[in-house]
Amino acid sequence: MKKLFYLFMVLFPVVVYAQQNWVKSSPLYEWVNVGNAGFSAGYCTNVSLAFSPSEQPYVAYIDDGNNQRTTVMKYEGANWVNVGIPGFSEVPSAYTSLAFSPSDGQPYVAYTDDNANLKATVKKFDGTNWVNVGMANFSAGYAYYNSLAFSPTDSLPYVAYGDLAYAQKATVMKFEGTSWVNVGNSGFSAGVTGWTSLAFSPSGQPYVAYLDDANSHKATVMKYDGTNWVNVGMAGFSAGTCECTSLAFSSSGQPYVAFVDLAYAQKATVMKFEGTSWMNVGNAGFSAGSVYYTSLAFSPYDGQPYVAYMDAGITGNATVMKFDGNNWVNVGSPGFSAGEVEWTSLAFNSTGQPYVAYTDYGNSLKATVMYYDAPTRINEEQESKLSLYPNPTSDQITIAATGGGQVSIMNLDGKELITSQITEPKTQLDISNLPSGVYFVRLTNDKSVVVGKIIKN
Image (cartoon, rainbow, N blue to C red; front, side, top):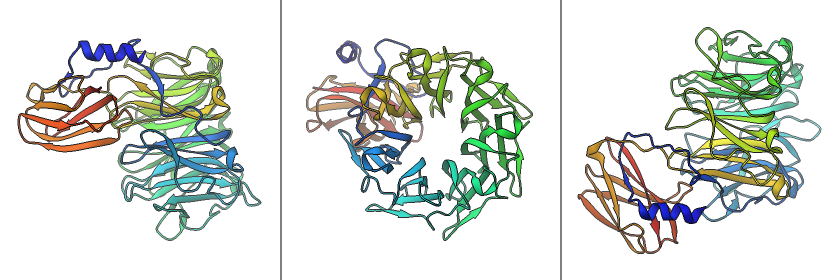
C-alpha cells in the first residue's frame, strides 16, 4: 500500500493551494500504526488520547503492566516513550482522562484512586515528575467516569464525574489555584449518571452529557449558566436508553452528543442541539451494526463530526465514520484494527488527520494508536501557490511560493523537524539529515496556511 502511495507522489507533482478542500476517498489512503502496535507494557484500559501543543500524541491509560496504575506515554517520532515514570499513581486507579493545559502546555490526568477512598485525583507533569494538582482524593466520594477539560476563558482544569457522595449524581469541580471547588451544586443531576462527558462551549460555559437514570437511562445534557446547572433542551432527549455518551462542540458553537443507541439495536447515533431541541445528525443508528465505546471529535479543517467506536458488526474491530453534510460515511476501511478493540479515543492533529487510540485485542490487549494517512485539508488562493521540487529528493528541496511566511517540514505525526522564514520567491532547504520517508511541508503567512507533501529518498 505504501509503495502505491509513493508511486502516486512521484507521478504527480505536489502543488498545493490555500483555501481548497482536498479530502478523497481512495484505496491509496489507509489507517496506519503510529509507532509499534501494542506499545504499552501490558494490558490497558480506560485509554484517553490527546495532542500536546507541539503536536505530539499522548495516551493515558490504566496499566496492567504496572499494577493497574496510571501511565502516560507520548510518541517521539519513532517510538512511544513514558512520560515520567510508568504507573505514577500511588495506588491502582480507574477512569483516566487526559487533557493539556492551555496556559503551560503540560499534560494533566484525572483518575480515581482505587483504594479505600475511591476518590478523584488530578496530577500534572511538571517536566520531571507527576505532581498533584491541589489535594489528592479531592472529591467528596467515589468518582465514576471522570472527564477532564480546561476552560477556554480562565484556563482552569475542570473535572466532571458521577459522585457517590451524592447518590452517583453529577458533580463538577474546578481547581482555582490552591484548591478544588464545586462548580454550582454538587450532585446537580436529577438522578444517577453514567458516562459523564465534559466540554466547554466557545464562550466558556461548561456542559456535561451523561446517561440519565432519572430519565429512563436516556441522554441528558446540562450546562452551568453561572449560577445553576440547567438542562440543555429536554432531559432524556435520546429515543431510548443510551451508553458511552461523548460530547463535543462544532466550530459554530453547537453541542453534539454521540452515543450507543439502544433504540436502534445498539447502533451509533449523533444528535445536536438546534437552539430549542435536539435533532439527529443524519440518520439515527447510522452504523452498520451494533457499537460500543463511541468517541466524538470535530475535524479542525472540514468542521465535520467524526465518531470512532468498537464495531461489533466487524468482530469488534475499530471503525471511524464522519458526517459529510448529508450522510455518515466510513473514513477508510471499516474495522481497520488488527482485532477487537475497547476504550476507543478519537482526536485530531492540527493538520486535520484523525487519530484513534484503543485497547488492542489483536496485540495482547495493549495500547495501540492509528491515524488515517490521507491528504489533510488544503486551501486554495492563487496568490499563495506553493511548488516543491525536485520531488522525490535526497538532499535539497526548492520551495517556490509567493507571499513569504514561515515554512515547516514535519513528519507524518505533525512534529516539526525543520523551520525557516521564507522571504524570496524561491528558497532551498537542506533535508539531507532527514530519514527517508514522506514529509509535510507547511507554509504559514498572514493570508493562508498551505500544505504539501514531499518524498525524501
